Length: 333
Image (cartoon, rainbow, N blue to C red; front, side, top):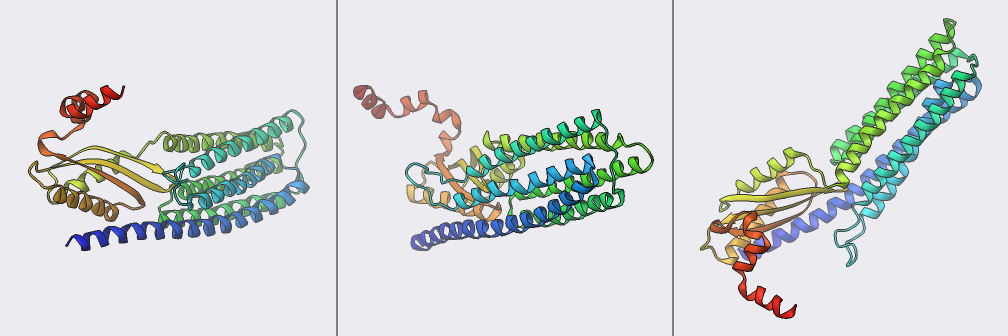
């Protein structure tokens, strides 16, 4: 029985490593394909923008190029995250995805700054846009290109369990809406209100800033070890459902890139043997790996029922409960 449990634990570890490799490969493919699509869309818009002189179209084009470039640091992050843990980086390099997120936010802010500057400059020095028909066509191309990329990223992000890819897809969907806003500038010029074009450019800049704010909140929440509260509830309920577990305490979890790292304490009968307590910890670990998606590691601490909870793990309590260890530390000090 013990050999079978040990074998199953080993299989879980192998499966986790295999899943990590498969995730990195599939996520890289999604990024590269969407990068090619975004660059193609932005390139077509840039050519049309050069001939039309539309500052609203230029703002949208700059943003699309910026979005395309944000795929590069995320791709690098996926590559680094595949490296095995070392003595220096004992948790691996999953956090590089969060660093890539910071870079993405910086690029979004930079694109907002450039677009806003050009829009204000054109507002102060009006130039009537030309080639209105082709500008409108470019706006439609931008919308369709972004929407196709958004749908692809969101679909694959949900399949892979990547919050970063889903968020990036939602970002691309918002970009498609801003492309449609360019049509308002075209309509204004056609109706004899050329100032509507830079005003739309300023409006797009404001939308980019809102996107940057939402992206920054997500990135900094992850970097500060923020977690979705509903995940904590699911972890607690899953651990409680394991036979032999009477209480679940000190549940903590955080994202490291696309992987979920979980720590918790479970209470078992005080007269239980160490071997049986270890078996229950394994069962909790195994249950969480199957109940939740994208779990990387699970650390389970076993407490006896009469000493369960964080109050039994404080320094003062441990000094009282472990006098021999405390005396030894006092002598070494």
